Length: 119
Image (tube, rainbow, N blue to C red; front, side):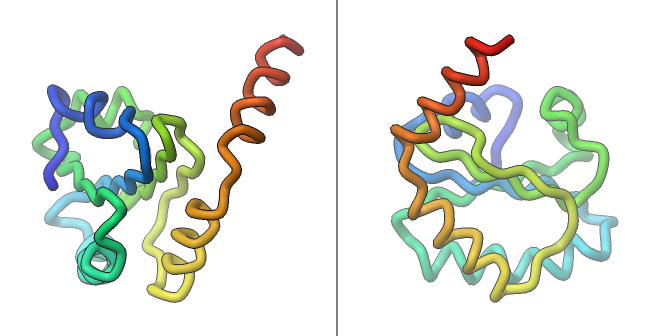
């Protein structure tokens, strides 16, 4: 699924897991990671996989703080739980997916609340 400035928030703030690949056609590492991302989308149909073309969606990429591509973001139940630039090999991507699936979101929300209270 291609994500745009108009659809991004609605698509990532929903329940479940959403993985987002920020990429550009001219980016070599992006082209290497693309097939890995696509294969994972077939392997994990319960997860939403979205792509943001940083050339077409400059405002969205800027708003998301993207300074290097590819950048992968993972959202679970509308909360950003992972963000990292750089292409990822398939085994590492699988590990990341399993780690996100295993997250206890009650614990994540409690940590966010504690961090906010400490400010």
